[in-house]
Amino acid sequence: MHIIETINVEYQYPGGTHALQGVDLKIKSGSKVTILGPNGAGKSTLLYLFNATLRPTSGKVLLNGSPMRYNSSSLRQIRKTVGMVFPNPDDQLFAPTVKQDVSFGPLKLKLSKEEVEERVSESLQLVGISELESMPPHHLSTGQKKRAAIAGVLAMDPNILVFDEPLSGLDPTGQADMIELLDQLNADGKTIIVSTHRMEFAADWADNILVLKDGKVLKEGVPEEIFSDPALIHDANLQVPVPVQTHNELRLRGFNNEQTPLSVLELVESVVSVFNDNGYQDLSSASNGIIWIVRTPRAVEGGVEMMPPDIVQHLVDIRKPHKIGAMGTVAKSIIINSELKYDFGTEVVNNAVSASLRGLSTMIFATGTMAGLAVDRIAQLNLRLNKKIESHMIA
Image (tube, rainbow, N blue to C red):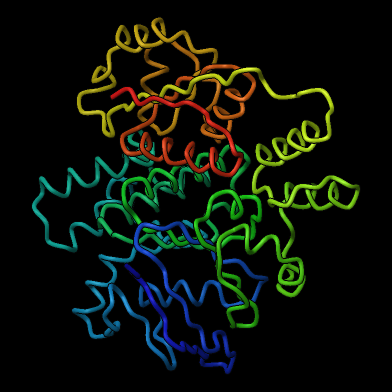
């Protein structure tokens, strides 16, 4: 099902700038979409149309198959369905405390006091800043402010989340944490639409990519289609992700591997494959390690004791993994509370698969629906890498 669709959309700003020209696109429910393009391509304008912050000069925007309407009651429903997170969190945070800020939207919906409290608590916990609820927003770091702004949007319970440059202003650790949060939200069933200048992120994360330039759609497709088209990348003034660039250079030097790698893991495996095919020393492990996936609670009701330390230690003692990974705020809290250390807190599945290919077994603790996301990601990598990595879910 296409949850958002645009039909010949045009947008012209009052000053005369023609920001969008004849944009046609379709976005599937539950997908992860990135919008790429140089500055001035129309990315932000398009995002603002998705939640009716802007109204098209001509053409139509469809939400769940119906054209958007712009009267006050329709706008309220659109904003409940499509949550918008701006690049600068200071544009969204205004209340004296984080909790008051996150409460603002649900209170406007005239929900009961109990339901407002529940939504606020769950949203703060999901983004990992429950302990900051009494803090003034202006005392927070950039990463914390971004999480507070996201919590305020999540408290409205939208089905679609739109992010304009969510990685901007964050250090590498903050970027990795943000990507994990986007994954967790998608695993919970949200459609995620992101504009970004980070090519490696777009290549390895998105289900589908839309490339804009001068307000027009140059191409729409899966990451491999986009990044294996050098003419498109040049025309759109984009950079090739490092794994793709390295792959292209290797091909020019005689490495014959047709599939475009979208991550460092895929790049390494493509090189190993070429070495093996040409009769060099076998660089692969004789046998792959197993990946064990432990589903942890999505919310911590009553603390991390929902998965007691002795249970966690028992699981580790039985399987004896060489490495431990953690996906999601609650999963990380459970491991820390059990006095264990996790080896992988970012790019967990890629790291677990890489360890498996070196013959090491891994145990991934994954918050709620992220466990299913890990299973799906391993299956995708098995297909792309032509491997048979064994994984098992521990409920």
